[in-house]
Length: 352
Image (cartoon, rainbow, N blue to C red; front, side, top):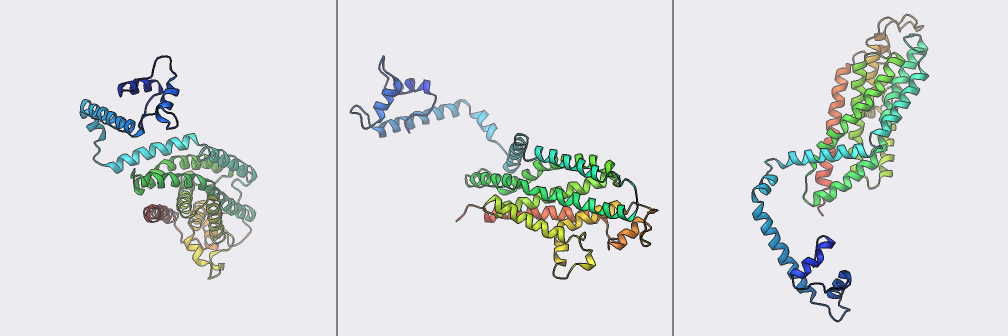
């Protein structure tokens, strides 16, 4: 390297090292003549390189000496991980705002789907016939299963972030912990916004029970789905594979969450998926939230369905506490991000 700086400063620099551009000569042609060995009047490139190094070193020493106190203050940071976390949060928030596919498009899509669901089941209202009760079970299954499934759309974004992380970690810029934490913190507000808009639309239109609990369950479901996508995106080489893998896992979780087959009817070789899939706890919490608060079902034709509690007994959920299932989802969320952290730390470390 023989020069680095603004183009209009090049003539001044070369003049300062003894190679001033002659009058009425094009500077670009002159510099090319100096450096290209095909021209007879070229100079020693190594000499120009040494002059450049000396000049840069002198300028750096002068700058440091003149700004010693301000430089020391700017680089003082008692806890670099906190600073890394703040910078990464700022970056992720900017990416979220600038890239509508992360939150904006999803918010619009989820809202439109919520309006469509509300319009489809608007006539259900507070009716309590057998058909309405079964329809309410179907509504809850579709709402949570569909909204969770849509999280596969962000696999490419997480893979792009992982590629950036790999490069910057190899450069020693930061470690996996602030990256994972900042990723979670910057994602949560957007997901809460999605959950709030969907809840605001669905609960009054379909006459669902307990606005706050429904919002909490949906918010936790979206958070866990996002965490699940995080570690899926970290273990696959291409986003198409990540989407297929996540979709397959979600399909199994939906199949065994207790809607299509009640828990007692699930075959023994599939019951482990019932306990492992987070869809189970989302669906159970939503069902208990919906029917646990309902009193007498005056229009129900089935003799066993006199109250909402009777419906929970029929579904094998009479001993389920929605608060416990919400805490299970919090634990699932922590495990997803812990696995994501361990993958970034030990598998994506960049070491051979």
